[in-house]
Image 1 (tube, one colour):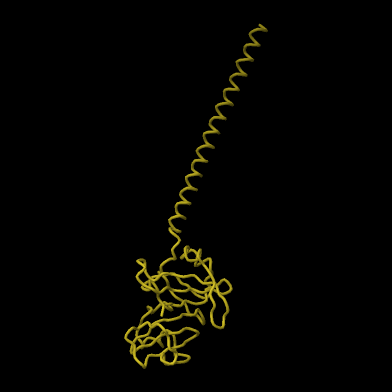
Image 2 (image 1 turned 90 degrees about the horizontal axis):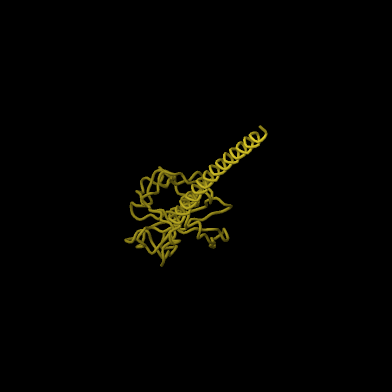
Length: 214
């Protein structure tokens, strides 16, 4: 009888050990599966970032995707200026400023700069083009329907133009000192010799300026 009791105890112990081993195997398989999923997620995320960054070129901002104060394109009719921006604060003949580049190639001696709320517009005949746009006194743009205004931070812009923010540097601005600036390309093909400078001050968007070489 004692012999059978000992045998029964040994069988029960073996059974318990087997159950523990099965549980450990299941746990190990679960852990491996979860780690595999996590690794796949990491690879996918890394792939997304690499696709975003690409070769490190600056991002593109197409002019047709922009609406100034939610209404006008970069080039618009003179008659709409006051409707959208109000009366100019000041006006100067472009000939007096002697710029090295013009928005309108076929200009005249009567071409003018219109200044409003720190922004600068080029006026030729019945057309107006945005040269520099300051985010002052409620000025804003819609870019692909997304509002960018004086409260827009550098981190907000990073979500839209990650490559350009990654390549951020500093440039001197008259009366402002050195400001952080990112550069945006005007087209995907690299046809334009110019680019767009977007300036920041105190981590907030400051202005947009279309730059073109002389």
